[in-house]
Length: 430
Image (cartoon, rainbow, N blue to C red; front, top):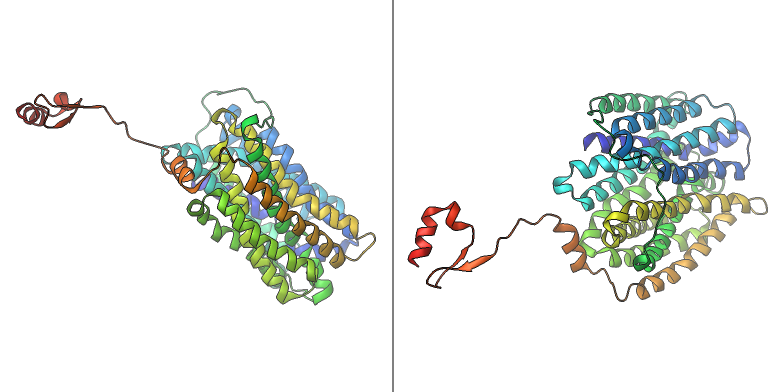
């Protein structure tokens, strides 16, 4: 489990190392805003098909083989960024990072489920979700600090990442090799059973909006802060991006207390506040952007984790992989597509205006998703009691039937007469 969590955090952190460095890349290589947002979105657009392609590979080839392939792809991505001399290198690097994370997600999830107590899928899902977001928070912070205070700002973050990947390679080498193929390697096809389509639609929509808010901060807010607020310190922008995801990580454990439905409603309310503030200022005010970052982080954690928990509860066991893969496609689309829309809008308006417009559109969609969440699944509502019953009672000890003693005065377990002679004698005597 430690190996799986370590790899998930390190690879996710590497995928978001470039976030506070985009203004520096843009100035050094002279490309436009559309190219910059496309470079960011390449990761999300590649990760989704990679997840479908490599998700079942762990069962067919074994986790060690898949994890090694993911580490090599991640190393290729970091090398492309370290040696970059133009935007083409950055695009290849982002594609390699997306492929690496898409391949590793399925293998790490399999390891977490196999090693979790009583194969508790909820615990494994929660650990994987928190590891994913923790890596997303760590990457921008480390890159910003190294870019500001270490030599070679566009090189040192990736050298550190390559060293962490080397440690991950050693950890993966200690894993046992696959003894035999469990199944054939076939790409996962997203399948949504008819009985849960309403729940899936609302979960996908709320998760899409959650990652839209986080994606705006990770992709374009650092550039707007540099142009409008004069914040050109990558350590400050990295800390701001880290704050969004740190709030998300800290709030996610409350999902098990609230239940997935209430968690999504509360998260959408917080997300609405962050998007409205972002729409009013366009990310041009540092103080307002900090408040928006905290609200967006809280909303992201509750909404994203609540959406995933909803699917974990309602998805049929034999179709869980396909449903989860389809849900993550919505998450990746929310993280990548709005950034591309901002880049397209910059052809006619400046980036702050584009961020304001997209923030306003996303904020206007939140009440619609809230209404859909309140109306969906009326016949199959996942309440807090049902959620706890399904997710905490993953293992129940066997309860043997009880019968009356010979004289009817004591209720004695049926197996007691063959396991405990003393109690048997007591039961016969009444």
